[in-house]
Length: 284
Image (cartoon, rainbow, N blue to C red):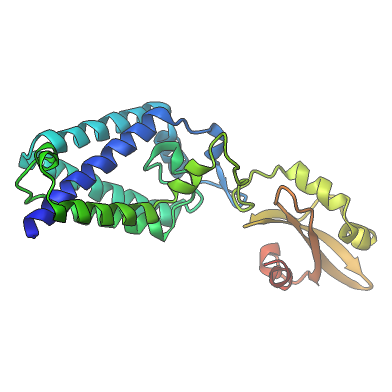
């Protein structure tokens, strides 16, 4: 039974590597999917360069060729060096996916090229960890992938099918693949959608919320503009009666929604973002 488990991991890893190679070489990523801002905050230069490098076509093709070569090697040889290289590759991928989840929650992992455009979530990290575990288990497999395929035992076939189903269940790429040209495709989530500031101002000035507070606004120049999730906040200085206030507008960044919310808060803090809590509770 142990040998069957080990041989199954060889087949699974070879299939995954070849699939990743095929996706990277055949599916191109759109430039628009490489944002340089996260929720309106500029991405640090180091992270931006890393993201640009990871999304470059040359890097994608190079990784794809490397993964394809490693997948083919697993099929044709049982040499320990190939198994070790596979283990190191998946361990490195696990680390990269974990880092992306923490530092670039807006970015896809690129594991399967442009198909991996959805932001990294727990499923992606768990999948990478499971592949690393499978690579460790495969170190002791006695046969190469082709040798296993020549006479597939029932145990290997059943186990491979179960692991393949688990892999598919942990793969957000299926939804992206289903949404490619020729099939209905969902729009970009509002928290990742590019929303120009001019669009925000157009929605704001046309809204009833702006009309309600326009006369109380003391300057056409906002104190601060920032984005959180599906909303862009614009804060203006204002005066209500004898009080100096900040009038904060929350403008939806969704493609279809034109919702605008507002709140009047005390102008007691030099940090406008610190006074936004009254409105946050209304828009989340």
